[in-house]
Each structure stands twice: as C-alpha cells, then as structure tokens.
Image (cartoon, rainbow, N blue to C red; front, side):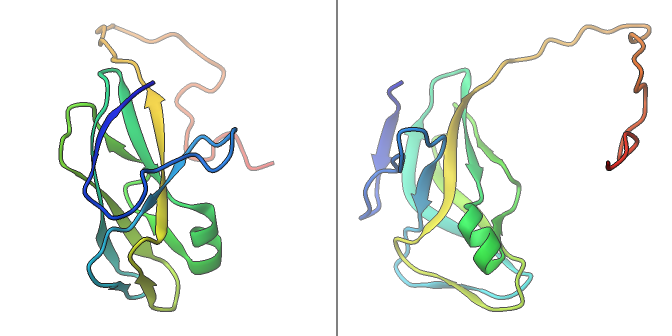
Length: 144
C-alpha cells in the first residue's frame, strides 16, 4: 500500500525494522529536548503529515523497550489517526516512572501500525442472543 506523506522533520521516514515488523518507529522532531517529570505527560511532535486511504487508520502505540526500561508509555493507546486527519502526527507520552525522562530530538518514541478497519451499521433490536457468559464482565471469567 502506498501512503502520501509529508516529512517536515530532519529525520528519515518511519520504516519497518525487520521483514516481520507490524509497526514503524516514530521519532521525536524537536528543536530542544522535552523534559517529562514522573507522572506527567507531554505531546511530542514528529514532523509527519499523512493522507491515509479511507478504510485505514494509523495506530500509535508504546515502544516496549521504553515502557519496560524507562516507564514511558503512550496515553490514549492505541491512539488513532483517522484517514481524514491532515495535521501533524503527535505522540502523547506519559512518564509512569519515578525518574525524570528527557526526550531528545530524533529519539524513537512510539510505533505506528497501519490497520484496516470496518464501519459498523447499527441494527436496533428488541433483545440480544444469549451466551454462556451473558452480561458477565470485568474479570467474571476468572484469572486462572
């Protein structure tokens, strides 16, 4: 699939690191570092603007290494970039650690997955079919 993209950053376009990668790393596009204090968050610009085909979205997700090693994650995860959005791709990073985190220009801060999606059409009904689970939720099936 080909996607129109404008890169206003000084970094290379996102790319797949391996042949089987689902996500492409997004890089911070900064004129100066951004400091994220513990339990705080910041919107990190990427310098990327894109035109997704209708029926597709871009999902912005945390990078597992940053999450495990530094306690850095993406809020609103996965974040959705809709096909009709034309603004800059931004990443909401949150610092869940006890230490200050500094985002540097060019740092890989998140990953982006391009995904096909369906549009739902609601059909109003008087009742729903029954299942073994029924209305049970929030741990009702147990933990083991």
